[in-house]
Image 1 (cartoon, rainbow, N blue to C red):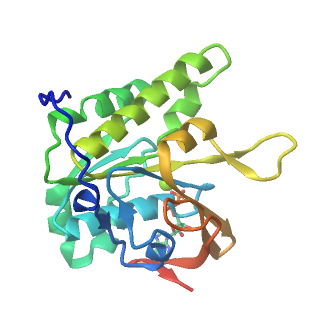
Image 2: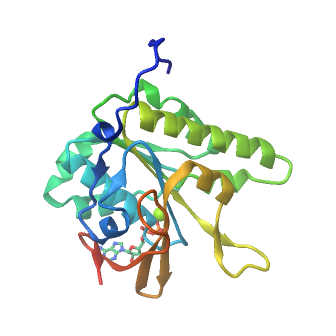
Length: 237
Ligand SMILES: Nc1ncnc2c1ncn2[C@@H]1O[C@H](COP(=O)(O)OP(=O)(O)O)[C@@H](O)[C@H]1O
Ligand SMILES: [Mg+2]
């Protein structure tokens, strides 16, 4: 993707700024929704609600007439859940959804590197659920440097697409507990943190769930909301 312009144009600021409102309690910690032009990262342990967050964002994007690319790297097969959350809009969601499954890190790379071939201004969202599941499978000490470089390149590509098409990007990330640190750390934390302008941690303790804002451009860190997952999506408690 190159620009044919050879003169500098002023940045148009707020005229390009928009969000996908999720229509639920998550909007409270996202200043109204998921922001265009940047990457929003959602991390947490298995079962925390990351895929639910992605599905709700997908349905919300379609409801404001945007097409969605959804890259599933975990074989979540979330169509039943998508149907529940979409409700009467399910057909509309399916028509606007470009769903890809990646089974290897190379496939994930191939899909992200080639998104230019399908994207246009009608797209409002790219989801990568999860950004690191396949990375994590093949990560070992020998290849970690090369793998990190490839993951960074994927992030750079996603940012480029977000800016060029003025769309939103949502990634999910898992957590692991490192020796001497009881806190759960995001996988490839430094890399994904570097590229993510908004970061939300989802926590789960039995049936109690909490979303904590870890980074945002216009809100303080560590504001929290308690939520529950329901048939239709997510609700505050
Ligand atoms: N219809 C539903 N009603 C209530 N909870 C649901 C429903 N569908 C899924 N869940 C809950 O969502 C959770 C899984 O969330 P998910 O977003 O897949 O987690 P993650 O992607 O973080 O692993 C499970 O605890 C499951 O019970
Ligand atoms: Mg998931």
